[in-house]
Image (cartoon, rainbow over all chains, first blue to last red; front, side):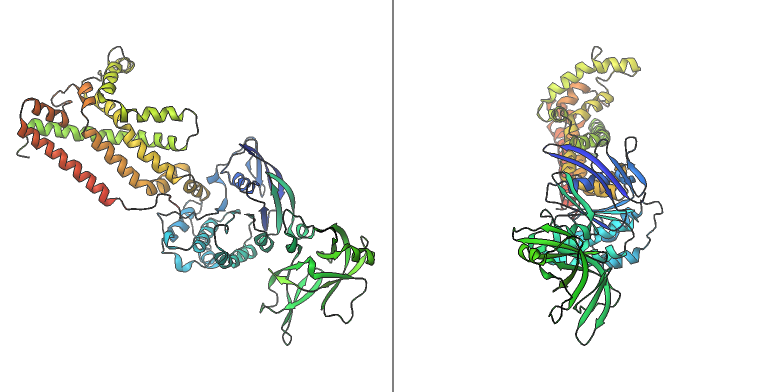
Length: 355
Length: 229
């Protein structure tokens, strides 16, 4: 009941959307795909901005569309952030923020200061949209969508129209949203790095169809060329700062299955982090390594041996605790070690990145 | 208005009354037509567009002639008024009104249609995701963002109706106090070789037109039309 069920068929000239999805009712779900894959159309169907006949949509136990129901977009309790700037030019920033609030049942500005603070727009309230930078406008648009207390937030490539610097500026705000919002977020993107940083759940789309619908950590551990480029293949693990070794400037990142030491980034103990462990930085050993320069070694079990992008390489998926790691080996090394499914193995991690 | 005769004044008032009523009626019916033309994907939309635009190219006498026939006892409009028990339309102010509304329709519809098309769907979609019903969005988003086009459409419709000649002559019949508007009065003066009187009235209309246009052009800021930024 706390899920999102979406079933749509839509025929457009030269394009057909055909999806049947069950999505988690919490966290950030990314719709990933190239342009023309149908991810924006899917989002618009969910918002009711496109009408797929005979569609079915139920959000957190409420039916928004089925054979006998059609909720007009303005009756759906959602927030929507468009790809390009979408602030009303005839209203100030404050007027834009109030526009939706006035039309909600309560009509009250709740959490106003919290949301304005979360997105860092307090100093912009009296300005006109025309005078704002692209990143500022997008932050106002996000705040405007959040202020109406939506039950779900839909974001259609909110960073796509921004340059690299602006993306970097706005990203921390999105991460704060992910960590602080209690509502599910559906996030459309064609940028692998954005998705790797933000998403908890991944839907990969191609030519109007869903080709994969899995939790992010599982999706990352089963590399897919349609989603990842060769050099990006690696595992994503959510954890938190567990300890800090001041003299050596190191921090231990704890996750279900163990801890990994990495350079200290001045994060406080307990801070939630997301780690990227590239497959090429992971090696495997039969025995606990001694006298190695690699500080991080963990014990796990082999859960899969997959083909890699090059015929000479293999990707070995290892479960450590409840987390999945990936190691990139040559097939010769894999054969020499005699790796078998289910076997116990030692994982050595050379490098960990915070994303 | 010492230099205007009672007849002149009467015709001037009649002109303003007619133009005011026509503009008001056109706002009510022209806005939905323009909205529909800007958003519909119906194949027969082009037929409606052409019909609305016809007065732009049609000689006023042609439009007036067919309207006169339609309003006559054998015409569809004439039969309708007869059935409804209203006075026949030809040679009445009501008839003038109907004819003028049709004649000025493109001047109201086209600027609005262009503005609605330039505005696009996005501001409406944004408003919908912020809980605004379509009608609410029209008044709180579309209207504030397209008011320069409304100003243009109102001015053009009003001024065009004041300047109308052929259609009002065909339908109205130039009856003093009922259908003799200022443009007809000027013609009558010229016919009677009363050039001084014709000049007074004509000068009034000239100044009026100039002032109205000045007001519109001076007030219209060079603002973006796309509505969202």
